[in-house]
Image (cartoon, rainbow, N blue to C red; front, side):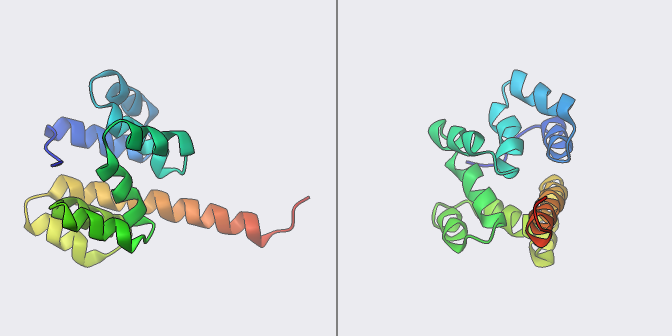
Length: 137
């Protein structure tokens, strides 16, 4: 799979990843369900992760797993010729070299989306850490 979506769709996806529910819903209703569902899967929703796998989008799940540090997912993307998606995952994991690679190879929109993914995952990691740092009431 290539990330060959119109620029406006990539822009909407980036906004949806950042939490814009109206654009997420627009993606879901206008033929880009995989991108809308991705926003839930990125936030660790098991049913969304299953949907991506069951509906022919394992590459998007591999991006999420790559962002989470799963080296096997990154290798899978590479092995299947999805180098851009591998770099997107690395960018989403905070690797500045991947951001630079995406920009230099004409994928500026994806570089910005990777930054947004990184922000979401960082916030989730911080929230998870907070839950385990404080005793339960």
